[in-house]
Image (tube, rainbow, N blue to C red; front, side):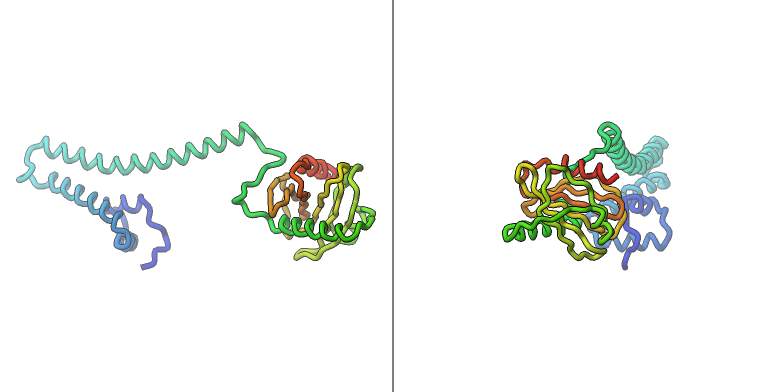
Length: 254
């Protein structure tokens, strides 16, 4: 029998207490038939509950009032034990939520954050790294001189480009096709002669995302999104203060 609503501890407790309707009881029994360890615990609870009920009604075996009172206390204790375990689980969740809220209010939001390696990179970040590596190969063959005009790029591609630092040199500007319109890759050299790449693309979703940092395929990437355009600043040199440079570019876009 396929169970669409998962069986939880509360269902098992209600099963022991006889509080389930027929349909749900059948679902619980089907679940127990596939989970022997859980079924053994439930049967133990049912056995104890049955013995306690017998103690309450069978005066020939347990005729003393003290015995009946003790049986009632044990039965209440059995139900209370299940309730207490449920409260413990709820309290644990509450503690974790409270801890998360304290961390949020204590430390606040960060401008640039390091993304864990287990978090998959956005598709546009992978595209940015590929464009950066393509530009490196292209620059090894020739060194074209290109004039960077953000207004012309915006008119041609609908991609808003940031103002670049005055001490950066434009090595090349390329337009690449992408799923939601053309993307722009600008190859750059810093005043220290280090190479980096600015990539801008329309990812197909509107968002406002602060600068984040990640390492991908032997490249360092600082990426962010403003509205319907996402940006990535890529470098192969870890000594370049990529996040700080990205924050500087972000300020020119407002």
